[in-house]
Image (cartoon, rainbow, N blue to C red; front, side):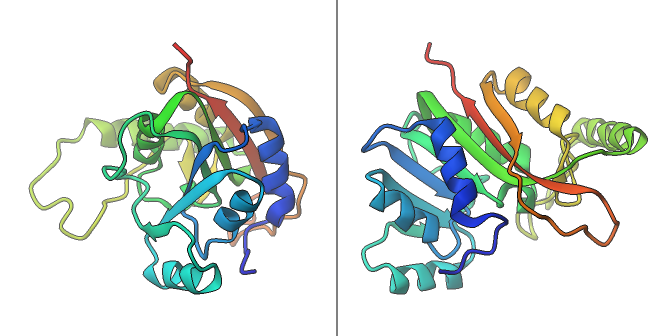
Length: 218
């Protein structure tokens, strides 16, 4: 096993309990790493597959779990999949590492079936500075108004500010607001995973959360 995220499968189990996927549900693990969760889900009777931008990890997954369905892929561009493909999407400690987490969630929404459920587990600030939250929101709004220029993507997927994630950790209320108001999904639960998380270099009080949201059935 090569699980480095906080809580390991204990957190995964908590998320799955809330998501309540049916046996045989098709699940996409975005940021699947070395395939541990994909293999774990398959052994539970789900039909799991995964994508990751790290080719070395994909290679390791295929060697460790022969026959596993994992491949190179970017969570912000799910063009290989038709809309309404998956019963579930999982992002375990991967969304905060993406340069455009808002785009990744829009893509996840599109490939989820009606009634499908999204699982996100990741870092969040337990008690963020309100001034910092406001400053991040102002900068996110400013960047959203900026026109795109030729060559912006020459160096790969460009990163930009969002009002719900800053320096690798999420803000709870802005994240929930984005999911419910912008995506139109219903957040079924947001809970602290109850696992220890080391403070980062900025001495922020970080926690690890489990969020489950559902796409509208109609």
